Image (cartoon, rainbow, N blue to C red; front, side):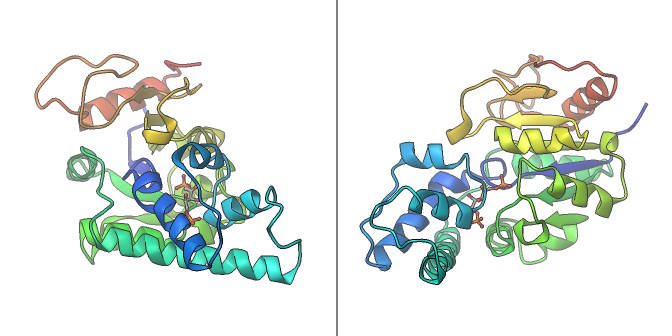
Length: 260
Ligand code: XBP
């Protein structure tokens, strides 16, 4: 039986509620400081999250605005400027403590590490955003604790393309079935599954509904044993633990999927 050798962590929505607490207000701040009347509310942002990548998201929105510059160098410069300033305000929000890690994340990283399981970051957000978030919460030396860190700059195609998961797996030197991806969004789950990596979904604010297909387990968060599919037995401590991950992973590798 293939052992679980690495956890592949998504960042936005999975490690932290970065979208609502960090990126969304930062986008609006960037619009405001550029003197633009554009603002995104939570509903609009939820819809825009279909588009992965902050730069791509701005461009997508702008294409639907009559008051946006037409295609050309002026528009490209505006998108680049807004994205740069968005990331500035995002880093500021993280430094100010506005974006916390989701409950249960740090415990599970530590518990799985203690069992020799490698840790990886697989995200298509910008590297600077990952650096900002993890240096605040895991300390300046956080990078040493991760055997692979794949970010938006490292790939040509963002999620749901499997390129980021493929790169991470190659850097780890592991087969897909030795890994387990933890994701919140359908695009992330699809990306990992396309690479053949079993997926656990921790639902997040913007991806609270829907039934992800083909994933090994789906639940409300790592800090609770309630509300998971397949159900978890009640036990203490009342959070998802290393033994649960091993169990889920073994089921996935054996071909028993719970959803879809
Ligand atoms: C998350 C994203 C990102 C962030 C913004 O991707 O969709 O676009 O919202 O990040 P993933 P940037 O699920 O792969 O973590 O502005 O840095 O692109």
